[in-house]
Image (cartoon, rainbow, N blue to C red; front, side):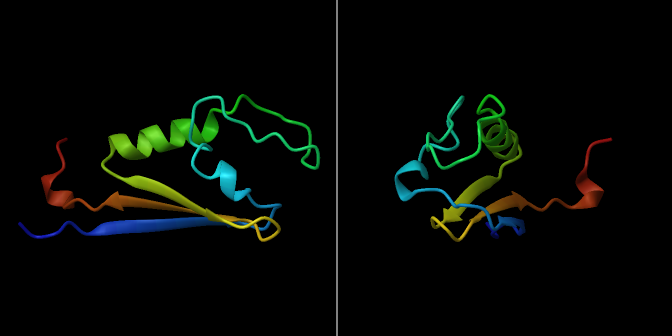
Length: 88
């Protein structure tokens, strides 16, 4: 079976970064990083959880690379489809 082609999208920021111990849990529902140095929390901790679920439902994956002080990079990989085979 031929391997499926995938499209990649990377979103990068130059914020405070994510501590290594938090990288495995940031996609959990209601998860927010606790850190006195960060701005006050706004939101419910659902954004990355929802994004991950939508991406996975489309056969894709989302990953993050981050280093404190250097920002974060989120990579989304989604399978490409043949436009001629899309159900209308």
